[in-house]
Length: 76
Image (cartoon, rainbow, N blue to C red; front, side, top):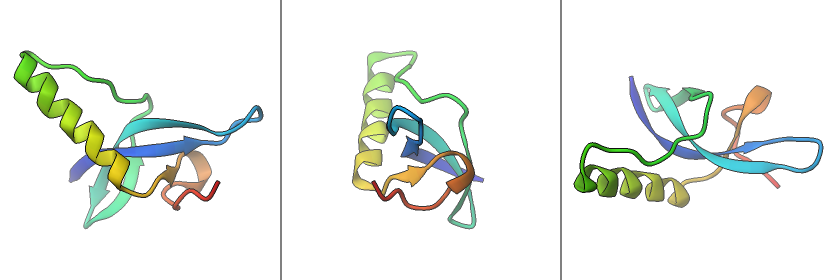
């Protein structure tokens, strides 16, 4: 199983919110995502830098819905 970071749209009564989550794939298809949004951690400054770069890559991909509409592409 592979993974990457993706922006997910959470539909809420007061309006949609966006957060970066870890998304897991089988055969290139998203199948699940982390319950909580991702954040930057690392054992060294270099680890943090690498993790930040991975988070930045999520900005280049289509946003996905969270919840019942996952993994459909978000349409605001």
